[in-house]
Amino acid sequence: MVKVLVAAPIHQEALKLLKEAGYEVIYKEYPSVNELRDLAKDIDALIVRSKPKVPKEVIDEAKKLRIIARAGVGLDNIDVDEARKAGITVVNAPAAPSRSVAELAIGLMLALMRKIAYADRKMRDGEWVKKECVGYELRGKALGVIGFGRIGREVARIARFGLGMKIIYYDVYRPPEEEVRILGAEYRQLDDLISEADVITLHVPLVKETYHLINEDRLKRMKRTAILINTSRGGVVDTEALIKALKEGWILGAGLDVYEEEPLPKGHPLTRFDNVVLTPHIGASTNEAQARAGVEVAHKIIDFFSR
Ligand code: NAD
Image (cartoon, helix red, strand yellow):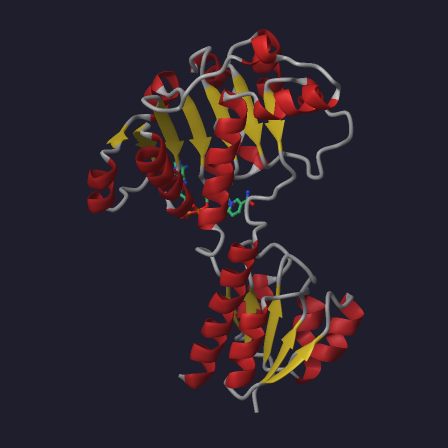
């Protein structure tokens, strides 16, 4: 019988699928490395989220283990190279959070353009800041999507069909033609997109080429009335340059879910701007995304053992 160790909370539906497949399911939430090393000796499959850690010392002991599944996207907590060397398959659920991250990006745009977070803060202080809260509509504005992958295209769909925005995009690969056509999206060179967009939203992975992609020079190229949204990875934006841009009014504002340093330290300069909206890396934090992630990896495990 296939023995699965579920080492992090996953959706009920995923547990049900595993049990219906006839697997023995053992549940131990976030075991320490020592605990996991002991538990892993006797399992065929392991499910984790961003925790627990699965280092080499666990993999070395896991003689029967054939598949590690991350119910989510990032694999930073798993020593993937060691796992692969040991012949263990590593899978994840890369599409599960796309819609949730896209909706958060749209939420950040609206929060900035209509000063929702700012107005809310003032209301709590008993201030009626009606005059200061004249904002902008998104309809008819140019949305510049940098990284036109799963999340970038989902943002574009909501923005185009829900809000009536015009879509321009930049990517190093060519996206599916049919989708580009339906969205009426137009390709731009990066620097052209940056100077044309009213809203720039970042959806690239953090790799060598995208580290500090948004730097001082590019922030200076943005319209003074444009906003920057980052729900990708903190390192895609040069934080120091962004602080300078906000201080000197090069851009209208920024909406951020991710940071070069997480958690964002208390009293960080970014927390002092009224035209900045901050969330604590919650892009994928919805019930739906978590359910999809659990179910997607449960299916992948079942497929794997039924091959
Ligand atoms: P994806 O792989 O579907 O899309 C990424 C796109 O970026 C691809 O189209 C790729 O061609 C493009 N790209 C890669 N390198 C590039 C470069 N140098 N210049 C321009 N484009 C480049 O990924 P996705 O699922 O859409 O995820 C996008 C980002 O969202 C990732 O950074 C991911 O880490 C982040 N993310 C954040 C959260 C959150 O909680 N905020 C959750 C999930 C994912």
